[in-house]
Every structure is written in C-alpha cells, then in structure tokens.
Amino acid sequence: MKLGLGMHPERWSDAHLAMARQLGCETVVPWVPFGPGDGVWHEEQFAALKAQAKRHGLEIAAVENFHWEHIDHIVLGEEGRDEQLENLCRTIENAGRCGIPCFGYNFSVCGVQGYYAEVGNAAGRGLASLKCFDEAKVDHAPQPNRKFWFKDEIARRSPEGFIPPVGEDEFWGRIRYFLDAVLPTAEKAGVKLCAHPEDPPIPFLKGTYRALHSIEGLRRLLALSPSPSNCLEFCQGTVSTMAGVDIYAAIEEFASSGRIGYVHFRNTSGTRPRYNEVFIDDGYVDMKRAMAIYEKCGFDGTVIPDHTPRLTAADWWETGMAFALGYMRGILRGTNRNIQGD
Image (cartoon, rainbow, N blue to C red):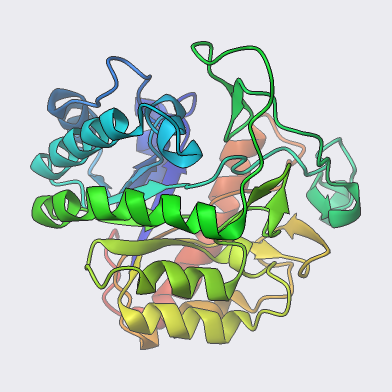
C-alpha cells in the first residue's frame, strides 16, 4: 500500500506537495482540480498536474470527481446527457494518456451535502470541533434547480423550480446508462472509475434516491459490469457509518474483490442514525485491524486520510493531516513491510 494525501484546489500548491512528501506520502489525489472549461479536461492539463507532483517526488494516484458542470445532465437523466457522456469519455482518455490510474466520481444528485453540524461544537478530544450527523435533523426540502451535488450552483441551469424526485429503479437505470457509455473507454484507457458511497449514507435525500447508501448498493454497482474499470472509491469513513455494517467484513469483501481503486481512511464514532467524524485514533473502528485486512487481501493501492477535525492550530488542516498521516504511516509500517518513502 501507498500513503497519499488528497487536496482540494485551494490546498493544491508546491508548499503542500512538499509537505506531503516530507510526511512520507508517495502519492497525491487532487480533488476537482480544474474548472468547467469547454466541458472536457484536456491532456495538457493532466500532464501539467502530474509534472508538478513529480517535481516533489509524488505520483498522482487518482483524480477525484468530475466537475459538476460536466455530469449534471447525466445524473439527472436530462436532455444533453449524451453530449456530456461523449465529453467525459474524452476526459477519461486524456487522463489515461497521462498515466492517471483512477478517476473517482460521485454519482449523486445531492452528493456530500452540508447536513453535518460543524459549528465549533467542541465535541472532540481536547474540545476539537467535529462534524456531527443526526438523521432526525436532515433537511428534506426540495433541491432548487440550480443546486447540484456538493452545495454547488450551476448558473446555466434555470433558476426556476426544483430538481424532480427520482426513485430507486429510475436512478439505477441512470447509473447503468452512464456505465454502459463510459466503461469501454475507461477500460481501453487503463483508468479505473471509482464510485464514492453516499455521504451521508441515507436512502433518500430531498426526494432523490441515493443508490450507494448501503453495502447492498455497492455490491449492485459492481455487479452491473465485470469490467476491471468498474471500481469503488472505498470511503471507509462513510461505509463505517452505514446502518448495520460490519466494517471489517466490508473491507475484506471489497478488498478481496480487487475492485477498490483507492481508500479514504477515516474513523467515526458510530453508525446511522447518529455519528461523528473523529480523530483517526479515536473512533469505534480499530484502524490498525482495518489496515491489516487491506494488506491481507492484497490491496496495493493508495490510502489517504480524507477528513480531519478542526484543531486549535495556525492551520488546522495541515496540523490535522500531519497527525493522521503520521498515525497511518506508523500502522502501515507494521502491516506493509515494503512501504517506501523513507
């Protein structure tokens, strides 16, 4: 396994790339690294991103998420989805030409929405601020037509009305349509398309079905196609909050399948309907045991620390990630004797 760090665009910098390497990372995962542009991310963009990481001794393990303006018609089953699918295929081809092995994606109308309470709640160790979830407090008001996925607004969409509700069968049909269109291109390009589970993992949000809210949903996605490019972005933090989950059995099942592209390695305080995102060493999941299962099952991809609580520090993200990476590096050295990066 390889140690990595994910970075949103505002964090992507030479300074943070140097920091990642200094902390023992071998890889990085840029999150939506480019704007919408002309609807396609181009080879020269990926090449520049990869070259910048390479200058710091790092490889790009994955690019995380298509731009929301590149996928909204596809997810919503609207007019214009076929054009978006053609453009996504071009984006995937361009990523493959640059040797980027994985592309994470979130096939969701509402995505990772702001239904957590991160308001200086001081619920964490040493009064750190945590992200907390309570299903009883979820806002199910209809989603305005311009709002899509990650609390984002798409200006070209009509400001009138709301995104219509969608049920289970219709939504799975949209996923199949997407996979049928892009998997042949991804397979030819040598790129794994890695689906993120629903966060929070609830079956409906604002009237729209959330297909990957359960272990059964993850299994169903992989069963839609045996393609080696049909994979998971295994967010252990999200999976660990699914109702009734045995997280160790889930890791073993999916790691053994060979269908995990990369891992979000995060700890939580429990499962639905209420849980908190906590420090990596402070949740209900035994993270050393979890890491050992990935190793036992032959997973050799990248693990990244994902989220961190807000600390009292000059830069809480840098400090939190340094703590998580140090913890992960310690347990990786105990499970993966071939770890590099010294």
